[in-house]
Image (cartoon, rainbow, N blue to C red):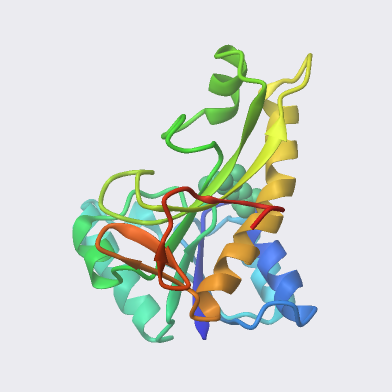
Length: 212
Ligand code: GRF
């Protein structure tokens, strides 16, 4: 199975995929890395790993629809089976999501449905949460609201800042994202009827990493 990875920034999640694939622990062909930002550090990681990279600059497109059209034609040249959003800071149009229905994964740095949107770590601290984490989910037209697949939890410690908490969450992200993608790559995981399905059973709750 082949995948396109979408990035905008540093790309530590992309690196986790590269490392797992190179170590032979994840049977996925990383066909292309696509960035909307020409300065994304993730592009260097792709080049170092010998994964083809493409940049579709969001600043070149005034309209969201045109950007997504360009994105789709770039991606389609590589014919990926799976689309992996890894720190891709763009909201995709409904048309784009529909085109790849049931084949787009995202990772969001909170225990969804808690804290959709931005600044999740600060919001978890401000809310006094003792547990925080990250969620891998299928992408649907509703932002950060598609069917959840897997979550990883971390403690919120006394004196945590958004930065220190983000570091802790990133570490768990690097485990849960390749693990969730592996389930999809092996054909065990699917998205249909607005739900995630594992081994033919509807997932009522996301899997908890370490306990799945
Ligand atoms: C991660 O925290 C992810 O949850 C969010 O963006 C961040 C990307 O980090 N969607 P990186 O670029 O993979 O280091």
